Amino acid sequence: MRWKAAGASAFLFAALVAEPGLGAPAPDLQAAAGTYRVTSASRIGFSIGQVGGGGIQGTFGNFSGTFRIDGGNIGRSTVQFTIYPQSVVTRERRMEDFLRSSAVFHAEKFPTVTFRSTAVRQTASDQAIVEGLLTARGTTRPETFNVRLTGWNRSSIAFEVTGSLYRSRYGMDVGTPVYSNVVRFDMDIRGRRN
Image 1: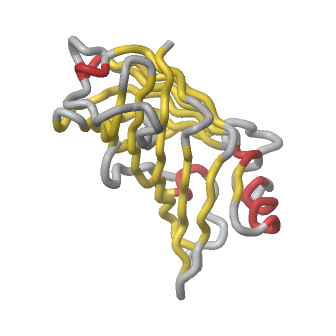
Image 2: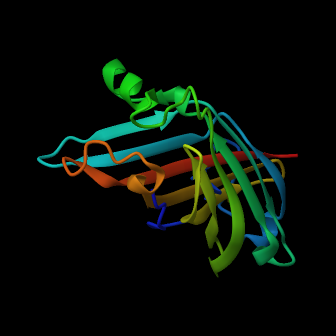
Image 3: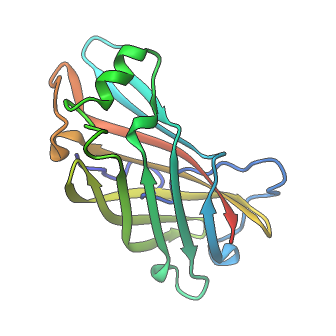
């Protein structure tokens, strides 16, 4: 599966939307420099298209991560993120069980999906592209995410993170071509300063 950038960058600075008390959006990433821990207020959403409409929409309820914004050189910033696929939630219990099964995530054998940044490139005062290595089902591939800073204050920060990947790259191509090979991510990532 290839997580290609789709609109604002991986794993991750996943998509933080300002929570109450964050104040106005930061004018730039440098101003928000610091180390942050991803909080449970974040939302990790995904969707997979389907021929004829419908498709699969879901979220992950269990995840963790940290990121560091280097104010002196955004390119030295880092992101680490972990998703626990056993926590996947969709509109149907049957679909959740299928996604956790050996046909897709094989959550029993591979309990985590991880992302570790390898490069961060600032593209605007409040935006960056994050490149990194995604590991799922024992396979590691390079992926890219778009990140946009949406708010921060002295203790909290919020990002919108988007991207897409090809699930076949991770051995999860069951159901294609009826279900799209492309998984789109739309994440609201919130962090608390360490």
